[in-house]
Length: 164
Image (cartoon, rainbow, N blue to C red; front, side):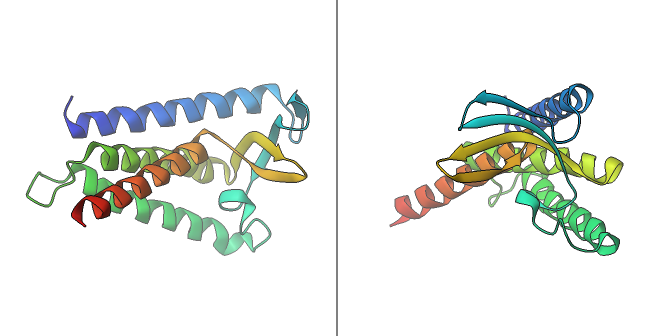
């Protein structure tokens, strides 16, 4: 499978999983319902996040917050889209790890952008605890962005390590 097709499949898979899980949560759980899966460690909770990742900007003015977050998402997706789908040339991204990381970030950004544009909030539902620390709830799109960013960091480390 060529890199462009693989990237497209990854993006479509992330968006599909994100949409299906969010629709399930929205249809089966009232806002702020909590289902304890592993007591003291993992819950499923229906929360609607009007802000950015981990609730950042959630308390800011809605007049500019939505446009700012949509603008950032579209800008990031445009840059990644150019990197993933531009015609091949010597500087093109051919490293599979980087392509997968970029595709995961793009798919996650698209999944959350979908919610933000159509509903004004992003549905989060996975909640973890580590001792007394409650990790902010998140979703499949957030997971894809985080994993993609991690893969990009690994790729950066590997490429710097091999050049040295």
